[in-house]
Image (cartoon, rainbow, N blue to C red; front, side):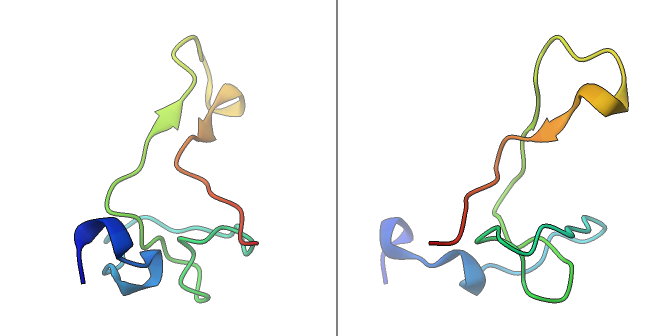
Length: 60
């Protein structure tokens, strides 16, 4: 299987990254992230309340 066709669920969990967003394709169903990497933004955030996971992809 090529990297382009790789399903998010096949990646190992990112150690120490907990995800409670059940409708994200990278959530393993047990609260952990299976994305290859994560991006947190936006650039102008000055506190944690202004940040969000920019890697999020909604399950269809």
